[in-house]
Length: 162
Image 1: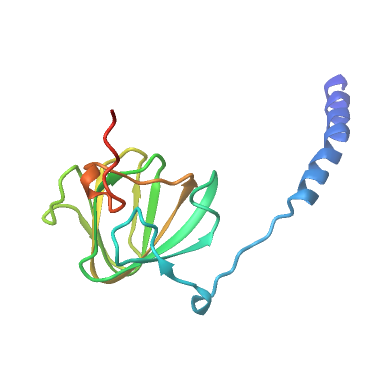
Image 2 (image 1 turned 90 degrees about the horizontal axis):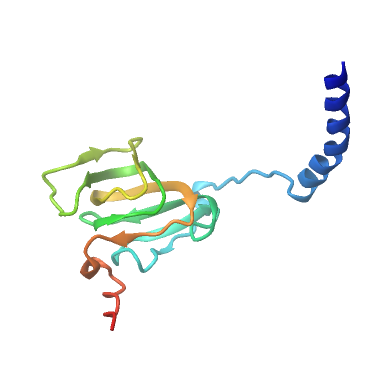
C-alpha cells in the first residue's frame, strides 16, 4: 500500500511536467506528395550530377532525417563510410552497393525498386546506379560522408598538415 501511495504521489508530481512538455513540442506529421518534392543539386560531398531533397529532419544535425537522391545512369559514389548507420531504400532504378576499399563493379548487390540496405556506422562501402535511380536514405544525424581515399572527395583533397 505504501508503494502504491508513493507511486501515485510521483505520478501527480510528474504529470504536469509531461503535459507541459507535450504542449511545448506538440507532435505533428509530415506529408510530402510526389509532385511537391523539390529537387536541387546534391551536397558537394557527393560527386556532381545527382539531385537531392530533404523530406524531413536535417541530416547535419542530431536527430532523425530522411533524404532522397536522384542519380543518372552510371553515377558512382567511391568507397566511403559514415559515422552513423545509413539506411537506403530504392525507389526506382537499380542501386548497386558493395563493401570494401576498392571500387569493383563485379562485387556487391543489385537492388531494384523496393530493395533495402542498411550499412552500419564505420563500414567502408561504395555504390553505383544502373539506369536513372532514386534512393531514399534515412538515419539519425548528424550524417557525414568520409572518403576512404581523400583524392575521391569532390570537394578537393584536404590541405596537407604542416
